[in-house]
Image (cartoon, rainbow, N blue to C red):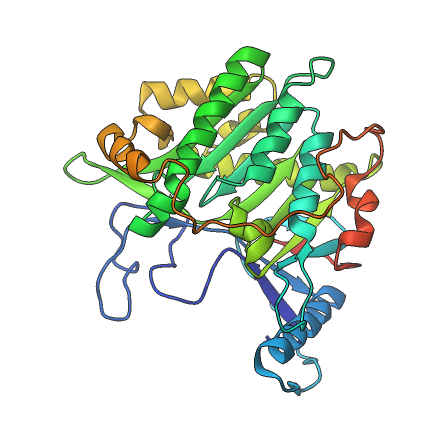
Length: 376
């Protein structure tokens, strides 16, 4: 906006996107332009000022040039006083990185870029305590393989892995292209957790309408966090297309060992979001969720007693008849969720130096790193 402030996250500019954090089953303000209501919706957006906003403008102009073939001349950044948005969660950081996904085109205008994929793989390999993911989908072969390899490393501490997903995909094409594979991936991760001693919690959230019927809250966000020291927000889903074929953009923050304030910021964001998914505004509950120890067991308990919004994700059990019917026709899923071939060198090698920063180690594959503060 005016070259001075940039918004980046999961929200696209279309219908059925607004909601507040209460996610009530019925909200008179949650309507489309044709006055039709829609169900509760959860997403995350970050906003930025300064150098990172300027960097995003340049990237926008570059993509405009590739898509349209001409230069986009924009006015210089506005000098108006900065806007402030109430209710945001601040990040105590002086730098933020931009990472991208884009596919190689036959006309040679752009090369394959898989920075987001590489960053996620490195982050999982470095994980020592907790992996927290909110996403619309979970079908990425790269993310699944990375989690599997980390879970099989017996010499390292067990992880708390929390996946907050949409209860089910919406469109039929997505059910057969992503839903089948997602169900298999979740099922295999649950088996691995039982075999290796890691704690895996896969959840969705829902509220109850006036008749007591469940109304799922659609998770559309794209947030990825490791050990409360790394946080990524952007447009990339945890599916194969977003890792290699689609055009995506994320921002990321990583705290070094001497950046306790940023560590605390990321930890507070995770706890605050979990409290929202549970349906609690109690500060004591947020404080309880800051703790990592026993977190999956605690969330499983809340899901089991049924007095909170959080629910165990049904996975294969959600609609077994429909799943079996689709799986019999498309056992590997409909070929719609593609990823470009990975580079020749493997990106699944174990990281030998666990103290090294994956953020810094992968800096050559990142678009850029900026000095800038941010909030979500």
